[in-house]
Length: 326
Picture 1 (cartoon, rainbow, N blue to C red):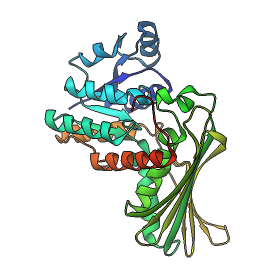
Picture 2: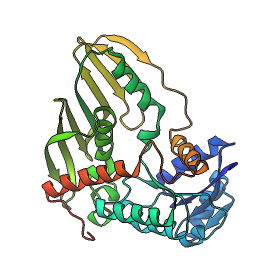
Picture 3: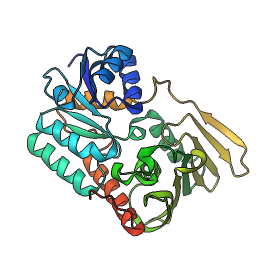
């Protein structure tokens, strides 16, 4: 495969971020097709980013034989519909997180992908970033001693954003923001969780507005997570050990990784590799997987996506948060 011809379903903010990343890849990929429900919107988007094709419907893009990879950038509640449509059209797909709104939907998609032998993966970009592996190396180096606990925060005042508060759009803090806290815990402490304690404060629409989650692991470690769309902005993670801590500024895409001693004094800072905007690593991983004939990316296997969906299902069930279409 020479340049990966990327098609994007949806022309919102996240689609702009992906278009920027693909544009910057130059030799590895190109912005080939954009689809919106409005021809005018897709044409404006195409002109802005240099797309070759602009479609006024998603079906038109999926029927284009020259699209090598479809990035699904539609609202959460429609990921299932368009991920399924990609597979039915034989189109490899990169589906924005959360992959679907629940585990049952995700399992159905993966089963269909297996049946049709079509590549599909979830676009939780944090798992593809090189910063992930730098942090893991620090932990394993022993620089903060024996690892004991972690905490992560992703809170922001976004109560004016419809997708956050609207149940019809699978709104709530957990699926939009909290998935990153769960990902942080999973990447660095694994998934052998033996105890879950959680609580949530609901928004007036019935979705979760502020969530607190604590995981206890089989080896005794703990992970505390707080996420909210009604609080002031906090966006970082901390991994604690017997000799100090690793502070990760930028929970979703680390902008700085610092090692501090027990008194909070700086020990060292790890340089973060340069990037276009971080989204390019998902595309490069997809390209490599497709070239190797794989149907998933090793950075985020289907089983891991299913586990994350299951964990969020269990949390929502405990909180009494459901969506009208479930």
